[in-house]
Length: 73
Image: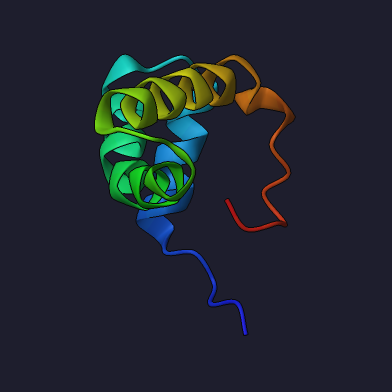
């Protein structure tokens, strides 16, 4: 079962929507480990995995205004 997001996560996402670099960094740090874990399962080495994660976060930040806050991040 999905746990509700914490207020802090909602605030981070809300501030990312305003373009705050500080909050983008917080979001990146919050989800980096999770994203790397997934990426490493499919990549042949750590450098490739890091590139995939960084590219994914660029896409996230470019499309953050389309994020539906009723769904899990």
